[in-house]
Structures are given as structure tokens and as C-alpha cells.
Image 1 (tube, rainbow, N blue to C red):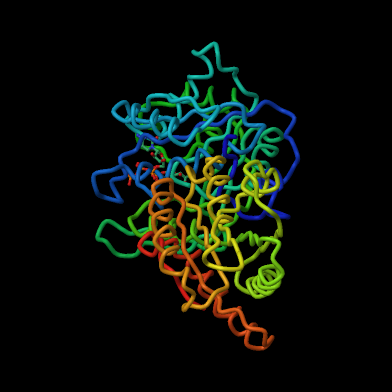
Image 2 (cartoon, rainbow, N blue to C red; image 1 turned 120 degrees about the horizontal axis):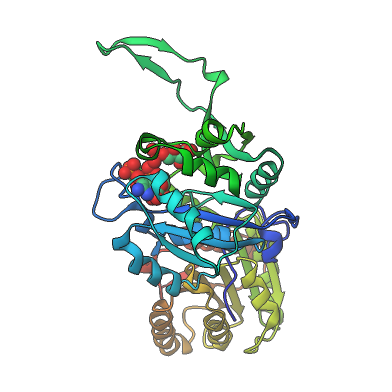
Length: 429
Ligand SMILES: Nc1ccn([C@@H]2O[C@H](COP(=O)(O)OP(=O)(O)OP(=O)(O)O)[C@@H](O)[C@H]2O)c(=O)n1
Ligand SMILES: O=C(CO)[C@H](O)[C@H](O)COP(=O)(O)O
């Protein structure tokens, strides 16, 4: 099975990848996209262009490609990279299994790279020229289906459209002596963001007509459509997550946001043992106040559990596997096998917390612990982070509730941090 899981917010039930992608509507025109990714990331500094910087182990550009790839009505995604990064981009496409992605060689400016991407639709007879083309910076990974759909529909109607945001700071102009000349009324202006979309012929023609100055110094595609194709773009207010990764601190912000998104869904799986089911129920209820969506299943795991595969497709990267005693972690092993088979951990680390009801004096404890640590080490290589959690099962309901609270806090911390250093460790609630 190919992994379709991805990192988007806003799923209605959280367990269907179509629903997770937002609106089910189709634009009823042919649509393709160009992702300019040919820059050097001067403002970020460092040797690696920002689109290839790794966030949680994966290059930033892969997140952006995935955000577009998951929208079934986008036919082709042209990723434009500088000539020296073509091989790197090819290996990213291969490693993360990106589909419908075509690599083009960029130019010395963003506009030149975009133009080069657009030309692919004309010169490559295998790629059909779309009616509407989306242009989206490769360094804006948090774009969602909803805003893409809106700009595409507006481009279909108006010829050009782009996402905008309110200004964060006031824009001022300085005089030649470095003093304030004038300031703009912030309420009247907007920041131009991405995605933008255009009727293909409008933007293609604008790029053909524009001069070298536009190509080398211009920063706004909507402006080219206005100046050369006489098209006033429709402006659409977008969500705050559209920001562009530009400075080093933006990488930390992007990592936090990705962690936040992937920690929002948890699947609790219990075996059929009565105590495990009861603990699972308690954890389910307690976790609800820590994360957005908790799904619980009581089942006997088998290799081809379709149910679980659907959950993975619905972008769930966090699993809690509850079994009665520590000496019995076959359930966890079985779940590991299923997770490995889905390939979902290629795109994001999967956190698997193996919960056991036991007391620490149990004779089986030390011998099983060794196998558990070995399993954790092994699956860490496949980006599956396995942690252990012992819940001291008590008949007293109040005490059990308290323990469940502690367990939920520990689980949430493990899921949010996704810290490889704690893999194979056994925590006690
Ligand atoms: N010759 C260029 C320059 C930029 N871009 C792309 O345009 C997007 C937005 O540009 P920007 O944030 O300015 O990226 P850089 O030019 O890499 O950054 P800097 O200006 O700091 O050097 C990025 O995805 C970048 O890779 C491009 O395709 N070709
Ligand atoms: O925000 C944008 C709207 O068009 C572009 O992403 C922006 O202009 C890119 O410019 P630069 O390469 O200077 O960062």
C-alpha cells in the first residue's frame, strides 16, 4: 500500500484522507501547479537552500509537494529547482514517493524560475497545458485544500487570483537621508501571499511580454498579469499558516507547527481483555482533553487489518496499544508489522506507545524488557518511535482515574516531543 497520509489540519472525522484534505468540491477545469524552488535562501543563511532543509528529518519541499499532491484534481506539479539541485530533487521524489511531480530547471530569479516552469506545459508534449495554473512557493508548506480551491475558482472567473493577509507591521518609506518620508495606512494594504492561480494563457502571455527588469527584480506575479494581460486579480483572504519560510527561526516555527498538527490525532487500541478495555476507555476519555481527536478500537490485531490501514490513511501518526501485562507485547509487535507495511512512517515518524498493566515486581518484567528495547531499536530505523508505559492497574476507580490522568499527560508529552532519545524507555504512571 502506498502511504496517503499527510500533514494537514481541518479533517472532519480525522480518519478519511479525502475528508482530511478539506472540501470535496472539484473546480471542473484542468488544473496544474508550478512550485518555484530554485532559490538559494540567502536570508536564511547556511549552506543548504531552505527548501531542502530538513524538518523532523524530511526536506521542507517534500511537505509542500505533499500538500498539493493530495489534491486529486491537480494533474501535474512542476517543481522548479536550480540545475545543481536536480538530482537532489529527484531523490526526494523517489524517497517520499511523490506522484505527478515533474522537475524543471530554474533561473536566476524567482520570476525566471516560474517562467521556466510554465514553459514545461508548452514544450513537453506529455504534459497537458492546464486551463488554470497554480503558482505556489515551495517554502510555504502549510497550504490547505480550501484556499487552493478558492484561488483556483477565482482565477477561473477573474483570470487571476491570489491569497492575501493583513499586514503585520506598518509599511513606511524613507527619504534619501534615511529619515521617515511617509507611512502607509496599514488598514488599506494587504500582504500578498501564495497560493496564486491564473488562467494559463494570461500568465504565460504576461511572462512572454515582460522585460528583463521585471524578470530580474519583480516579486509579484499578480502584478505581471495586471501590467501585461490587463487582468485585475481577485484577492482572497487566506489563513495565517500561509507564511513563507524565510529566516532561520521560521524553520523552528515550521517544526513546531508540524509537531502540533501530527500530535492532534491518537488511536487507542486494546486487546479484548476486560482490564485492558476498561483502561483503554479511561485513557480515551482522559486524552480527549489533551488532543483533538481520539479514536479507540478493541480488536485482535491481524496482519491485514483494513481498519487500521484506513486510520493511517487519515493521517493518524500516534498509536497507543494496550495489553494486560508487560510479558505480553505480541499486540505491539503485530501493530509494528502493520505499521511497517503501510509505509506511512516514510513521511512522518510514528509514535507507538505500548501500554501494559503490570506491577514492577512481576518476574517476567526484566526478561521482556530486553526484547522490548531490542524491538524499539529495530523499528526506530524505520521511523517508528516505540515507547513503553506501565499503568499500575487498580480496582479502586478513583485511583485508577488518577493514574489515567498521569498516563494521558505522559502520552501527550511523548507524542508532542517525538523525542528519539526516549525510544525503548519504559515510563510508569
Ligand atoms: N532563482 C529563484 C529564486 C527563488 N525561487 C523560489 O521562490 C520562492 C520564494 O522566494 P524566496 O523566499 O525569496 O526564496 P530565496 O530566493 O531562496 O530566498 P532569499 O531571497 O532569502 O535568497 C522559493 O521557494 C524559492 O526557492 C526560485 O524558484 N528561483
Ligand atoms: O509573497 C509573494 C507574493 O508574490 C512572493 O512569495 C514573494 O514576492 C516572493 O518574493 P521574494 O522572492 O522576494 O521573497
